[in-house]
Amino acid sequence: MKKVFLIMAAMLIVCSPLFGQIESGDKEVSFLGYFSTFVGDDVEANGFGSVQISYGKYYSKYFQAGFAPTFSFATITEDGEPKVDVQISGSFFFNLNFAAASKTIPYITGRYYQYTFDIPEGGVLTDYAYVTVGGGIKSFFNEYAAFNTMVTYGFSLREEAEGGIVMIMTGLSFIF
Image (cartoon, rainbow, N blue to C red; front, side, top):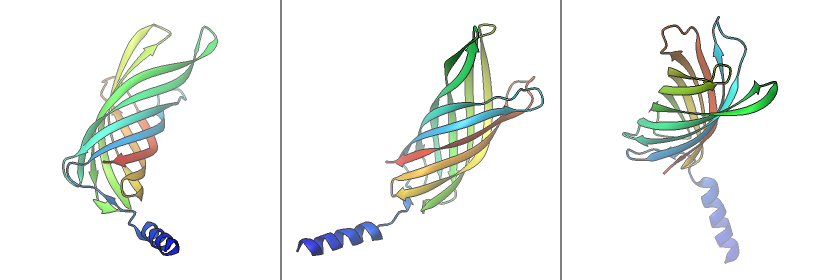
């Protein structure tokens, strides 16, 4: 009897669908990490990493909106010594899925980011606001969890700014 039960349990696990089943009213929490770099003629080579925790709600099977606090970590030099600097920022976002029940769900995204950097040289808080657009793919490994990868390009809202910001984010998403 144990053998029959184990075989049936193994068949259920192997044959169970790996599709994400998104419904209106579902909520999603994502843990994403990314590397970003500012690009343009007037910026020097740079880069930093961040961790983002996002929370969104599906208002239909295809449309999601939410917010995402972001913790950025950079190595800076202060008084000739390397120092790890932590900045906190946030964004509001929307995602528009191209599928609602699939193993792989592609989507487009739009985001408004607000960064506040404490620049050590002048001791001045500097605000940066960006509007980003891009796309991503959620690859489900079970019905409620997926690997999430997104690429966006951001446009600065400052008049004097040139160039933009490219972000590549990857991590895990959980739907409940």
